[in-house]
Structure formats: C-alpha cells, structure tokens
Image (cartoon, rainbow, N blue to C red; front, side, top):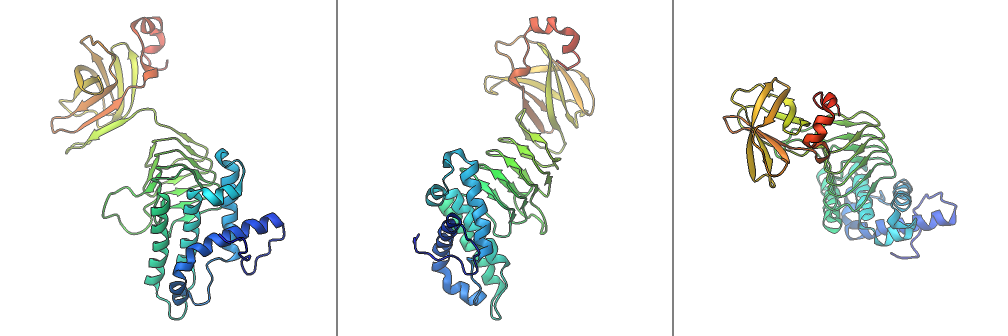
Length: 343
C-alpha cells in the first residue's frame, strides 16, 4: 500500500483523517484491481472500480471493525494492515460493484460475472470467507474471525450486521436448488454467532441475535433472541417424525414434544455413556405432539438423550438439558410443579 496513493477522483473528503483512511482504502482497491486492469477496461471502458461511493461505503465498514471489535483497539490502521476479515468485506464490495457496473458498448455480461467471481474466489482463498458477488450487504458490515463463513448469491443483509466464523447463509438443499431467491433476508443490526446456519428464503427481523450453532429455517421476528437448548439428530426413513423439546418431569419420567409421534410401534430409549448405551423406556401416553415416557430400569448414570425409533428405521434423538435433570429428592420436594412441566 503506497502512502502516496491519491484520493479517489470526485472525493469530497475534507477532514485529514478521513482523507488518510480514504487513501488507504483506495490503495487496497488498487492492489486488487491492478492485476485485472486490462480485463476491467475491456468490459467497462472508462468506469473505475474505486469510486468515491465505494470508498465511502468501505470507510463505514472499516470504522465498524475498529469500533465494534475490541481486539482492534479502536485502530483503523490496524484493521487495514492486518485484518483478513476486513479484506474479505473489501473484496466483496469490489466484486459486487463490478457485478452491478454498466457494461461498455463492447462489454460482455459473462466476462463481467467471471471477473466478479474471480475476485470473490481469490478472497475465499486468502481469507477463508466466501461471499457471492451478487449477495446484497448493507452498510457497516463486520465479519469477525470469519473462517468458514459462507453467504449465498441471493442473501440480503441490512445495515450494521455483525457475524462470526462458520456462519452459513445458505439454501435448504444440497444440490439442484431452484433459481430465484433461495437464501435468507437478514434485517439490520443482526448479530449471528459462530457456526450458526440460516437456510432458505427465510426472513430475520431487525435487532435479532442468533446464538452459536443455531439452525434457522423459519422466519424470526424482530428483536428475538435465538439459542440452542437441545441437540437433535434424525435418521429419516419413509415416515416423518420430529422432536422439538424434552422435559424432565421426575427422576424417571420424561415428556418428549414434537410432531408425528402417534406412529404405532414407537420405540423409546434413554441414551447414556456418550450415546453408546441404550435403555428401553415405556410409553405411558402418546399423541401427535407429545410422548410421555418412563425409565423402568435403574441406570448407573443419568441419561443424556432420548431416542425414538419407528419400525422402518426412522429415528430422532434429542439431548436432555443438564439443567433440567432432577434427583428423586428434588422431584418429591417439588411434586406440585414438576408433574406439570413448569418448574
């Protein structure tokens, strides 16, 4: 990055510090575009990728990194000089600008897409962050840590979003997804924790916080807080079964909630020792949305999960929250509330 890089043509920055930031950003854009300058000229003619509008947009991202990540110590030069996650955001801004720029009279749309994708793919290799050039991202965007984060083609994020590493804003299917909108719409001021996955054309409202490892496949209203309470694993056969929650009602009594639970010959097991030991459970009551289970045999260790299995091999298991586990004495002391599932 050259200290003598000029301000972008048309820049109206007056404050010396703003000018310094804009020069630094223009230098980074120049580093990215210089190896591709002939291709850019052939596709766009005189259009320049480091416009004042793009630099101003990046300036907001830069300040957001410096101010919101404590590890940056409020230093934008530190972010510019060492943050690969910021380079991922900068590369996306450039790739997106190229994808949306007007073609020259002899420009080719296919070349335009390949040029934008080339920048995005290089950023993925350099930073570990993969953002499709067509994804729409609002102002002051921060990807913190970033490795493994993927943002799909039709994703749309509002202003002031902050996401961590391993986040996937993707489609619901692995292959053969339909054309059209298949990725999430994320509101403004949304925070997404590490390894969270938001899949499909769902809508996440403003000011939502999505915790680590959460899987989102339904709309989330504004202001909501989403976190993982249980881990569920499913093996799907011909039948449909789903578990959404488990409640500890007594030392040996569990209520499992979900859907498709009226299947005949439903087998229930309590799992312990890292899921390696299974103890049969008795079904006391059953409806489409709940199953009441009792553990008839004493076990050395409290079960850590429940598994429901159908004759065709379909099964679903869900972990039992440790905080929900009660001892026999606790169950007797709070029998007035424990059997209602409200304690």
